[in-house]
Length: 139
View (cartoon, rainbow, N blue to C red):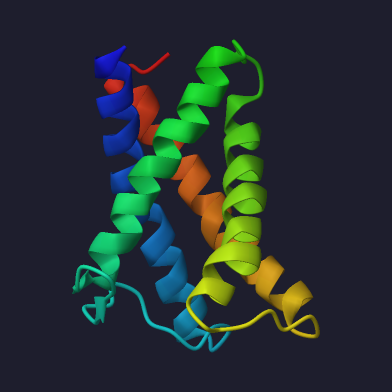
């Protein structure tokens, strides 16, 4: 059980670095989002670089996603389910919980476009987490 949790965390952590952040970089390069990938700006409360904070939370979400899939014994369609889970769950939590907590507010007019961007970025994370989970043998 502990092995599954550790590998799920590592899969989610690496998915941020290898899938999530490169998609952020592509969207930023095309002017679709205002922020660049791999931010080294310190984030509260611990003052760690932004990329490390995002990777840590990616690991936590990796435990949640892979734990849910294992608990529910989901075996078919894992790839699209991982993409949907990342795209919907992570984006909704970011828009409805994290942004307001960080003082960014809840801009209802911008919500649809923010959701689309977040869905693409976080959906890539979900697929990446599944790639690493498969590489590590997490079933």
